[in-house]
Amino acid sequence: MRVRVATTILGITAALLAVPACSTDTAPPARTEKPADAPRQAAPLSSATLETRLLDESDLGAGYLSRPERPAQHDDVTVIGCPALSELGGDAATGGTLSFPRQAKADFTYGGSSSEISEELYSAGATKLSHGIGRIFDAMTGCPTYQVVSGDTSIDVASQKLPAPRGLGDEQWSQLLTFSTAGRSTVVKQTAIRDGSLLLIVSGSPALVDRHLDKALTKATATS
Image 1 (cartoon, one colour):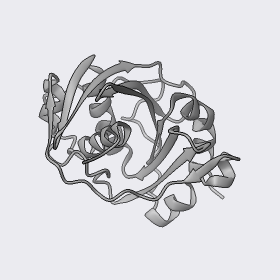
Image 2 (image 1 turned 180 degrees about the vertical axis):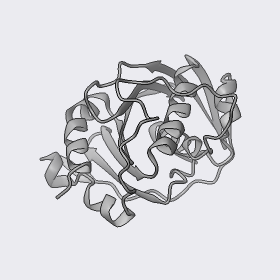
Image 3 (image 1 turned 90 degrees about the horizontal axis):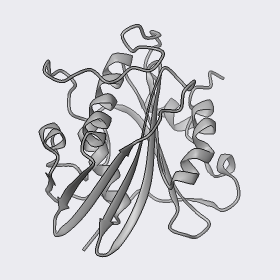
């Protein structure tokens, strides 16, 4: 029936990020050098503005092709072996977008191969962004292995917390995810950077994420 592994898990990540960050029994996300409790008070950007700040084929260079948005999937999702993720939710985990109303997204393939890179931009209050992304990264990296069942597809997931890219934005998170199903494995790197009222998430093949992260942040935070 369905879905490539990377596509499924990125949808899961997006849906879980949509859970409100208001629980009092959840520890705050680990801080980097610039805490979110003293944010720069920039006004949130509109979705139309975020669209203009996404990378495009000319920014990425030769060999990159824009990938049309895939139709939304509506299978129920169950997380097994990771209570923290289960508590955050997952019924609509393949929906693919966060609840923040100001958002934009672009997906690309590279070199006609299976290598892909995805960029997402969101804008909201700094504290809301920080708590939302911090909760999902804490939950996912807190479980070294777990299983995701979506429809009739079962995916084994291994997660590894990576050192955050220091010096970019106000807060940073990064992880490496390995998805295995039907005897095949896919490795996805996911890095998130909050800069004021803007959240950048770059996901995909590790080499492509490393190559284009700085460029994505520079364009996303440009003021002219």
